[in-house]
Image 1: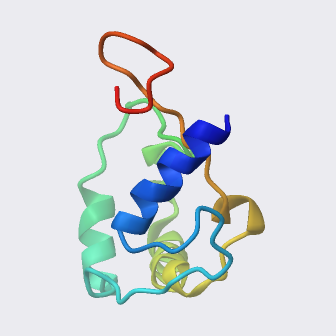
Image 2: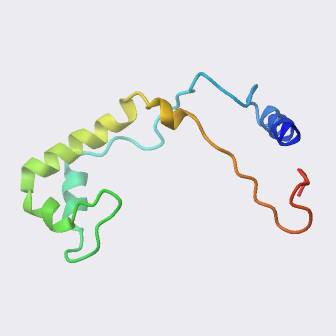
Length: 109
């Protein structure tokens, strides 16, 4: 286990991260501008009815039936999403090495 930890520590140092366990979460500028109310409205109009729900389990019919009220709430939620503090559980990650061929215990594989 120490061999794998050392291997990944070296990989992260090359990539510019000083330690494997990082306590400070860097912030970045948003890649895209915040969506306008008009963009949210156009996107909700394009939703297909009678399709399976996504990960949020909210059917498109419900969003469309909610009208302006729901679109307004979605717009507010989208624009505030990037400004929230991340929960502690999301600040940690688990690295799972995936090998291609050969020795599974070799760090270079």
